[in-house]
Length: 145
Image 1 (cartoon, rainbow, N blue to C red):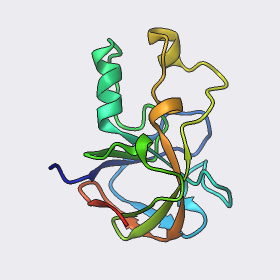
Image 2: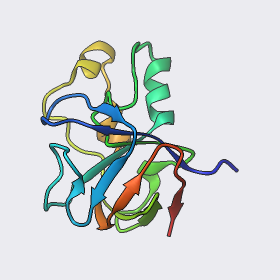
Image 3: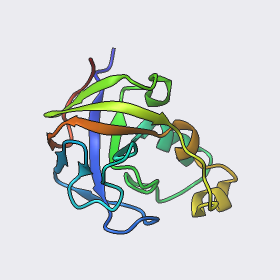
Image 4: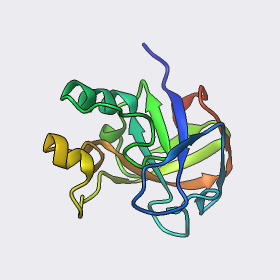
Protein backbone atom coordinates (compact mmCIF):
# COMPACT_ATOMS: atom_id res chain seq x y z
CA UNK A 1 0.00 0.00 0.00
CA UNK A 2 1.33 3.43 -0.96
CA UNK A 3 2.06 5.82 1.88
CA UNK A 4 0.17 9.09 1.63
CA UNK A 5 2.42 12.12 1.27
CA UNK A 6 2.63 15.78 0.33
CA UNK A 7 3.51 16.52 -3.31
CA UNK A 8 3.63 20.32 -2.96
CA UNK A 9 2.71 23.35 -0.87
CA UNK A 10 1.06 26.17 -2.84
CA UNK A 11 0.29 29.78 -1.96
CA UNK A 12 -1.34 32.90 -3.43
CA UNK A 13 -1.63 36.40 -2.04
CA UNK A 14 -4.97 37.01 -3.81
CA UNK A 15 -8.19 34.99 -3.89
CA UNK A 16 -9.28 33.57 -7.22
CA UNK A 17 -5.73 33.09 -8.48
CA UNK A 18 -3.82 29.86 -9.15
CA UNK A 19 -1.30 29.26 -6.38
CA UNK A 20 2.47 29.03 -6.81
CA UNK A 21 4.58 26.26 -5.33
CA UNK A 22 6.79 27.06 -2.32
CA UNK A 23 9.58 25.02 -0.65
CA UNK A 24 7.75 24.74 2.70
CA UNK A 25 4.68 26.14 4.35
CA UNK A 26 4.26 27.53 7.84
CA UNK A 27 0.78 26.62 9.04
CA UNK A 28 -0.63 28.61 11.95
CA UNK A 29 -3.09 27.16 14.46
CA UNK A 30 -6.70 28.29 13.73
CA UNK A 31 -5.49 30.43 10.79
CA UNK A 32 -4.01 28.39 7.92
CA UNK A 33 -1.00 28.85 5.65
CA UNK A 34 0.99 31.95 6.58
CA UNK A 35 0.74 34.50 3.77
CA UNK A 36 -2.09 32.78 1.87
CA UNK A 37 -5.15 34.79 0.79
CA UNK A 38 -7.58 32.12 2.09
CA UNK A 39 -6.07 31.86 5.57
CA UNK A 40 -8.10 33.26 8.46
CA UNK A 41 -10.40 32.37 11.32
CA UNK A 42 -12.98 30.27 9.41
CA UNK A 43 -13.64 26.65 8.45
CA UNK A 44 -11.80 26.65 5.08
CA UNK A 45 -8.30 27.60 6.24
CA UNK A 46 -6.47 25.08 4.05
CA UNK A 47 -7.46 23.38 0.78
CA UNK A 48 -6.16 19.99 -0.31
CA UNK A 49 -6.39 18.18 -3.64
CA UNK A 50 -4.92 14.83 -4.67
CA UNK A 51 -2.41 14.57 -7.53
CA UNK A 52 -4.53 11.62 -8.67
CA UNK A 53 -7.47 14.04 -9.16
CA UNK A 54 -5.27 16.41 -11.18
CA UNK A 55 -4.13 13.43 -13.28
CA UNK A 56 -7.80 12.68 -14.11
CA UNK A 57 -8.12 16.17 -15.60
CA UNK A 58 -4.89 15.68 -17.59
CA UNK A 59 -6.38 12.43 -18.98
CA UNK A 60 -9.43 14.47 -20.09
CA UNK A 61 -7.12 16.62 -22.18
CA UNK A 62 -6.32 19.59 -19.93
CA UNK A 63 -2.70 20.52 -20.52
CA UNK A 64 -0.23 22.46 -18.38
CA UNK A 65 -1.75 21.44 -15.04
CA UNK A 66 0.70 21.83 -12.19
CA UNK A 67 0.22 21.66 -8.43
CA UNK A 68 -1.65 24.80 -7.35
CA UNK A 69 -3.56 25.16 -10.65
CA UNK A 70 -6.81 24.41 -8.81
CA UNK A 71 -5.84 26.88 -6.04
CA UNK A 72 -5.16 24.08 -3.55
CA UNK A 73 -2.72 24.76 -0.71
CA UNK A 74 -1.56 21.16 -0.38
CA UNK A 75 -1.28 18.72 -3.28
CA UNK A 76 -1.24 15.13 -1.99
CA UNK A 77 -0.70 11.61 -3.31
CA UNK A 78 -1.68 8.19 -2.02
CA UNK A 79 -4.85 9.22 -0.16
CA UNK A 80 -8.43 9.55 -1.46
CA UNK A 81 -9.22 12.86 0.21
CA UNK A 82 -12.87 13.30 -0.79
CA UNK A 83 -13.85 10.03 0.93
CA UNK A 84 -12.66 11.24 4.37
CA UNK A 85 -15.59 12.16 6.63
CA UNK A 86 -15.87 15.71 7.98
CA UNK A 87 -14.23 15.67 11.42
CA UNK A 88 -11.38 13.35 10.35
CA UNK A 89 -8.04 14.51 11.75
CA UNK A 90 -4.87 14.31 9.68
CA UNK A 91 -1.26 14.58 10.77
CA UNK A 92 0.56 16.30 7.92
CA UNK A 93 4.21 17.17 8.57
CA UNK A 94 4.29 18.87 11.98
CA UNK A 95 0.61 19.89 11.79
CA UNK A 96 -2.68 18.37 12.84
CA UNK A 97 -5.61 19.35 10.64
CA UNK A 98 -9.32 18.58 10.82
CA UNK A 99 -11.47 18.03 7.72
CA UNK A 100 -14.23 20.66 7.74
CA UNK A 101 -15.72 20.45 4.24
CA UNK A 102 -15.69 18.13 1.23
CA UNK A 103 -15.81 19.95 -2.09
CA UNK A 104 -17.28 23.37 -2.72
CA UNK A 105 -19.66 25.17 -5.01
CA UNK A 106 -17.97 26.50 -8.11
CA UNK A 107 -19.60 29.93 -8.40
CA UNK A 108 -17.64 31.23 -11.38
CA UNK A 109 -17.00 28.52 -13.91
CA UNK A 110 -13.19 28.49 -13.93
CA UNK A 111 -10.90 28.30 -16.93
CA UNK A 112 -10.59 24.53 -16.46
CA UNK A 113 -14.38 24.14 -16.50
CA UNK A 114 -14.60 26.25 -19.68
CA UNK A 115 -12.06 24.02 -21.40
CA UNK A 116 -13.20 20.57 -20.24
CA UNK A 117 -16.76 21.05 -18.98
CA UNK A 118 -15.78 19.85 -15.51
CA UNK A 119 -13.60 21.02 -12.62
CA UNK A 120 -12.30 18.57 -10.02
CA UNK A 121 -11.98 20.87 -6.96
CA UNK A 122 -15.75 21.15 -6.28
CA UNK A 123 -16.10 17.36 -5.97
CA UNK A 124 -12.68 16.04 -4.94
CA UNK A 125 -11.01 18.89 -3.07
CA UNK A 126 -11.31 19.12 0.71
CA UNK A 127 -10.89 21.85 3.30
CA UNK A 128 -9.34 21.71 6.76
CA UNK A 129 -8.70 23.88 9.77
CA UNK A 130 -5.39 23.86 11.61
CA UNK A 131 -5.66 22.25 15.06
CA UNK A 132 -1.88 22.27 15.69
CA UNK A 133 0.43 24.49 13.64
CA UNK A 134 3.83 23.70 12.21
CA UNK A 135 5.87 23.30 9.03
CA UNK A 136 4.91 21.13 6.06
CA UNK A 137 7.29 20.28 3.20
CA UNK A 138 6.95 18.21 0.03
CA UNK A 139 7.58 14.56 0.87
CA UNK A 140 6.07 14.79 4.38
CA UNK A 141 3.82 11.88 5.33
CA UNK A 142 0.07 12.21 5.74
CA UNK A 143 -1.55 10.03 8.40
CA UNK A 144 -5.20 9.69 9.35
CA UNK A 145 -5.31 9.97 13.15
